[in-house]
Length: 132
Image (tube, rainbow, N blue to C red; front, side, top):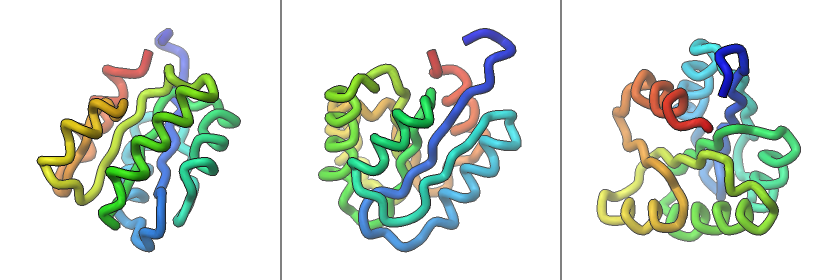
């Protein structure tokens, strides 16, 4: 991306997870780093998230989940993105995700997974370094 191009990031909460404090902290950190941030709110279906990401023409999508449904929801989102022409969107995950699940998520198209306690600086830098 050119130096003057503002990175557009969507922060989304797939599934029935009712807690979004962490997602809001990340959204604020990305915004403070000069990115344009769209937050979808709670309880979004994979279809709603993908539709919004494509409509908003985002560069990156950060999925936040605490419910344990990541092995179902994250791959569904990456599959829908590929089917609908959004394969160029950088997709990341965060939340309570067991280490053993991370390789499968990465194989499904999740570029990076950020666990509890990851500093916002690490996430901001990953987005900056990996958005095409």
